[in-house]
Length: 75
Image (tube, rainbow, N blue to C red):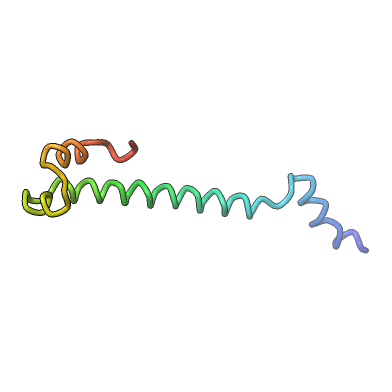
């Protein structure tokens, strides 16, 4: 093995290795969290915009719907 062939392997070891899988996993988790929070926000906004007959149709009182729609998306 020549010195040029050994350099990338040594550099990867000296710099802590290859973290591309960890970085990708972290980005996927962040994206998943963002998507979940965005879906929660859209659902609460939609609930706040529903008419009385729509709320009655899904079995939710107007008071409960307004209360739920005022909850911040992170909760």
